[in-house]
Length: 382
Image (cartoon, rainbow, N blue to C red; front, side, top):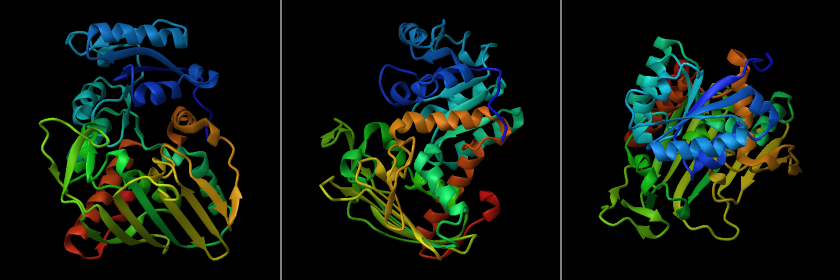
């Protein structure tokens, strides 16, 4: 692999507010270490108002040690997309606004980073991918599970033959009620997950296929315990005036499939359960001819399979201590940024990976609807 670029990558940031994921994870992930600060130079921010833009620019200027240009969406003539001093723009906005935020950036010839799901539904993701290809820009999507220190270790163990040929893998994943994703409660900022095209398990499937390779077939069965999902502002706090939304997908379902390697996959996904002592949010086993790997978590976000919290790792029943896990999500994102800095040789998720993932999710949705075993387009996953 090539070394990170010696020329700093000058970045702008849309959606860097006082609170939330962007402020406590995304921005710190490119500023928390000297190497990252030298590799990525935060040069501009764009928020919804002039006052917030100036405040945000001032705050982060103190962190990085140089001036940051403030932009705001109310100024149509002076936008971050037109800034000639930027190489890349990070987009951290609500899913409903991702497409409209990204297209001007792409048309200006700038590379971009965007959070999953990279557009509402498959159609918007395809539109974004087509635009990126047309204008020849590099892309990065926040599917950072593959950059986890634990997941990297698992991939290394399998590649090194620690468990021999992989024969099967099984996952039991539990979305806690308090997380506010799927029924019976959905946080008001995550209503998009109730759209028909947004099948659960995206982060999990991306991590699984990154380690074990693409699917060749899937079948699915579901059970619905909650026919609607209440829109909440916090656990147990309904949003006034928001009617419950129909549950498009079962709150419990099982996916069985085969991989191109011949390995069998069995996944049980469920939501609606409260967090209680002793209840795992993740149990993932990978079994080979010569041994087994187990990952497990009892943390609320453990269900996302190393996207937010690293699971505990066991090889043949013995716990494996993994260096780097203490860095948490910022370290995981930092790994992704350093992969991006390597150029074409870097191992990070792109908009094309997002399209492939949504095509797989669409295939699973079809299997769930029809009850049939459905073949997967393996070329679309390559």
